[in-house]
Image 1 (cartoon, rainbow over the protein chains, first blue to last red):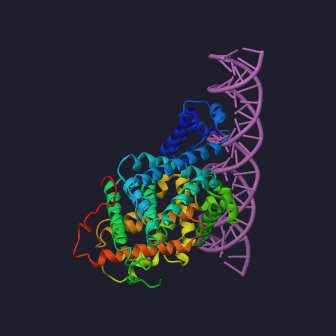
Image 2 (image 1 turned 90 degrees about the vertical axis):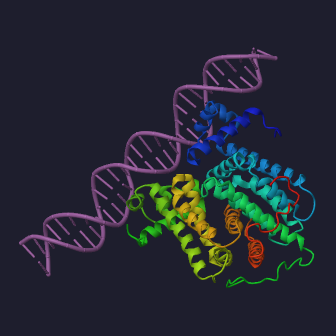
Image 3 (image 1 turned 180 degrees about the vertical axis):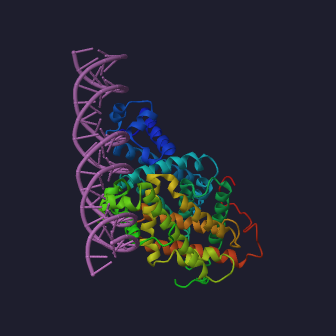
Amino acid sequence: MKRTTPKLQDKLLDATEAVVARQGIANLTLDSVAAEARMSKGGLLHYFPSKDRLVEALVIRTAEGWRSCYTEAYERTPEGPGRMSRALLDHCLSDAKCWTEELRRSSSAVFAALAQNPVLIQPMRAVYADLHRRIAQDGLPPGVGEAVAAAIDGLWLDWVLGIVPLEQVRVVRVRRALEDMLAHVTQNRRSSKAKSTPRKRLGGRRV
Amino acid sequence: MKRTTPKLQDKLLDATEAVVARQGIANLTLDSVAAEARMSKGGLLHYFPSKDRLVEALVIRTAEGWRSCYTEAYERTPEGPGRMSRALLDHCLSDAKCWTEELRRSSSAVFAALAQNPVLIQPMRAVYADLHRRIAQDGLPPGVGEAVAAAIDGLWLDWVLGIVPLEQVRVVRVRRALEDMLAHVTQNRRSSKAKSTPRKRLGGRRV
DNA sequence: TGGTGTCAACCGTCCGGTCGGTTTGTTTAT
DNA sequence: ATAAACAAACCGACCGGACGGTTGACACCA
């Protein structure tokens, strides 16, 4: 398989995303993608021999984009405990391009895969497995890094489902709260490593 | 409109969920639902005059279930700052039934709506708006409660996408990390209200 | 001339929704 | 009490249209 996707295939994937973003998954048909890319259906099927392959390629591109996003963020982040978590907060929760177009794009890929054939999310799963492996080795008390990652996923979900319209301030608030959690957890990391705070119940019933 | 859904309509909604859970959204057809419920397509269309109405009813049922879930959790949680957040952590992140069948169910409704007609998630949006209103009035520093809610959504997403297979321990780890954050934030709430911790940068670039 | 890329037309299938009809249960008239 | 009358519940054959994918031809260039 060619490693670098030729230009035209990328254009077709862009068209696929555009269709999903504008008309929804239900209208993701070969005809609509071809029309969006100003190409005939035959031409489209020349590059992606089936709809499954098309969606698969889209998922792979998106997954690898996400992987390189957090990988680069990781390398740009100073060493120390919680490096991966800090990278996520500093880079992937910023209000730059990372939090607008990149997100719409990923939602297209994920939902298209989900609707077309759930097996096709597998590349995304692989990337997430890698991310969570990094987080597990992050030198933080258990659960902290996972909470950060989960919160980011949750914000993403809210965003793409339109549960929160556009509120940039909300993202900033959440990021600061998580940064505070990281700061607190790392500063007295030696004094309480595994037990974190002394398991004080906050009024709940069961543990 | 009748408040209590007659029994048969509930059975049909159950069948819809079963089809989505077992065969995926792509196979959610009127025929498959009717077959699952051991009824003819005509019978199904007698109760839900179109596929949109069927999915809409499913979303409403799921959304209201989620609302009553966190509402009851709220009332069972002792008063004080962060009551809603504590309720979510104690109740909706437990390892009881709340975290297995209820989740599969909600994924069916959300994804069916997303595939069929994105407008149909609106009831779910309304419920989430209510939840976030409660969280905003929770008496916590800004962002903390939202981080908790986002983390729960993220775990839900990971779960239904199969990104994490079944790991119950991971849920417990995240819950404890978030409980620790709540405990820390509430105990010195008076000493640092709005500025939380003194905005110590952890090595990132931009704020 | 043959390979590469592109196209329009077409095919079989399937899906959402319609429609006429049958069963079932309840009300009304005698 | 019984039958006629009615309405709601339910059925399944059918239709129009759309979809994924195939085919075979055309255009362009080496």
